[in-house]
Length: 130
Image (cartoon, rainbow, N blue to C red; front, top):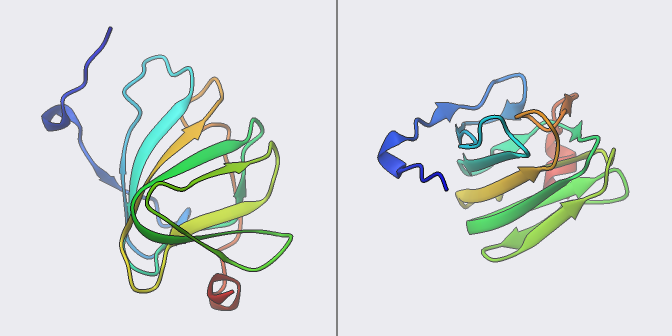
């Protein structure tokens, strides 16, 4: 068993090439990682760029309101307690609603810490607005 106390976790800004807006990330405590697991806080309106994961991704919304989208349609609202499962290779994005912070936990089932994420172009305001 390994316990990582909150006081020993160091949040870091999400890289600008991955996100629009301000995003804070807490890293996975697993070493070596069996999955990439991150707690991510999005300020209102902040969101990921389009991206894919070869093994898929699961996000669980801990608090706040958010939006998620894929190439099949418009933005969908999500909130506290909701979970979203993205299929392997599915191009998608996720982030906070315009009027709310959002915290979610991501689970990237892969052999490296970022889940093999392929980062792409930013999500435009029209796509984000749904």
